[in-house]
Length: 456
Image (cartoon, rainbow, N blue to C red):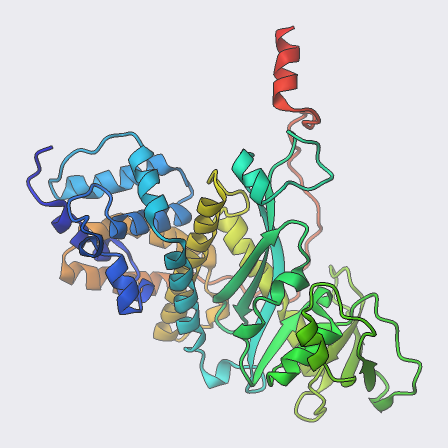
């Protein structure tokens, strides 16, 4: 293959091909060295690590997630520089993706999320406290033997008729929307079990905000030992104490919770022995009168016992903001199309997930920077609009000069900051679908058996 330029020179222009400064994706020197061709002696490979990482992130952002589109993006950039023609076979690119260590994606996503988390201003915090929101979700993946072995399909589905699935629990920053870390497991793993791998993420002074699935005596007590307060909805299985509570007022009281008699399933015995015998838990009950809300009566549990600093109204508003984590997962799974994964092996599935989380944090960083630059409310910046503008301008960044890149960056920040979601407080919409699905029956038998019937 004869080329007018070296492929090593070709890769040096890729930092400009990414609208976010490349340093934002590789904040540590060690990570940046791992993304350069010189680190692996791959300066003349068609797919050195830096190019593969750039293309893989582009796959997560582009509506077309195919490897063919990623290869076409690489070829387009190479053509602009007068480089060689690459084969249209995506096999070499897929092998290059697999050569990238899984830990690289994990470290980059975590570091970028932590960097954005640290940029939250004091006036953006809730009662001067940093709030981290926890929630769980799930994803499906191609039905391959490798995926089925690592992440089996739900037991309710017949063999050959379902898809492997995994559970995912994530920790988000309430202020910036950044994803700080996630824990992955099989579909049968409870969210609380996965969360125990993420407890180390909380620091003294933090507030954990979660739904009723995480309301556990053990977790509340262990977080309290770390200096972390909790705000959760009362679990539906917890019986109210028969003892007379010490009431602050009619719907706000403090109760004494007792340690479980036996070690809960999934909790280490060493952690169980660290639990105190009792806990003072504040319970706040209130009613929701907003149209469209399914839940009408909510009881919150919290370790924030100071009723003057943390009034019941402030706690209710905080739990109302917990819904933002549902929107964050919707951005990742629906807008960025991570709901159905494409990779055919478990290790590549995990790389694909972490690449989506890295790309998500990149967009969140851009939204936060644009909001601060133009003094707008960060919560009203459109995530979908930001994604569309980044993908639309990525081709211009790839062939721009240094001066043009600075101009494009200014334009991008302005466009992102002016694309705001309309202010629609307490918006209520019916949970219905107008467009009818196709009238095809569900698949209840393996494909091979159905195809055999067609040939009969």
